[in-house]
Image (cartoon, rainbow, N blue to C red; front, side):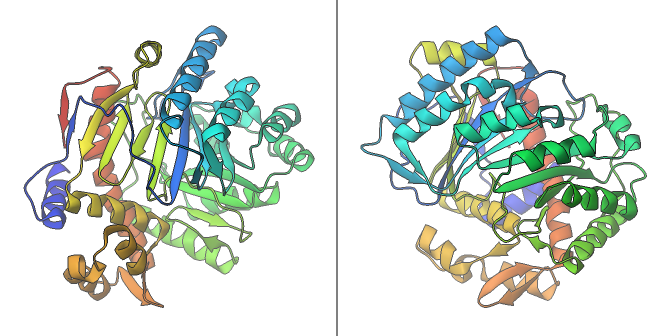
Length: 417
């Protein structure tokens, strides 16, 4: 897998230079001139730990959670106070973990953000199905949350069992959601599970929209080496057939595809913390992407809190991009939206996309991965599948390696990818 990603990286960056993350950080983050800037907050606590989940999380206890939120608030003030005035940003997303476990303090966090940032596209938060109760939902809405994403994974008992998840009661979810409306109600599902069929996945999607979702996310199962999941990945041909079939089904139902994995029944229903040109990340394991650098905070809750007490940013590793490296990163995550706009690329980098990647664009069209629509490069079904296929290689070669190390070391000396 690393051979494929290394060759791709060398070709697209026109260099043998790897991505080198070093144990260094900037005392002041230069986000002032960043356009299309998003915000992300990581809350790492869970009542129970799912064996398939690769994200940074720890077992919840109230005392540790409060200590962590205190540190998080200080990090927000440390970063926000370096910018004169209020910075306009697109959105704020809370991920985890289970952010609703900190629902009592959510208003404090959002108030701190509002001191320094003007949020224009709403506030999103991930929820465990157990948290979808009227009292919790009202607390979230009163705090300012406008979008929620519920991690269902599957309504079907056989897949809940495979994933080690408790049964979900759709009618209880429907009743709670009907009492407290949100701009976006998204539900997450995993596809490419052992033996999963189109009918299985279709029933999950249909059930989601029936009980109150206006947006669904269908993520592929990825077998991270450091998780304890016994689940085996689905073979390539079966996976492509399943992805193509559910995509075609959603298109026939009139659902809008807003990213590689997401479909919505209403135009305004959007939920994605990933499709941003730049973003600031707060909390342990949170990442920050700026014009010429990428940084990632320590994965250790204790180390995170300790650094903040020392009035030092909790950055574990920083990558200084070459210009071509930044272009590759931009294109990879922009393509997640299924479209690449040459005008947006030129605004960001000050150079035409065609000049930098004209050959690759022609090849993508020739092989049927993309087509032109109004000057924009749009993914085909085939292109979407191979994006997913390559993302799997990228995840296991890059993210799996980095997260595997950072779960064990709070501040690694260096990671080369």
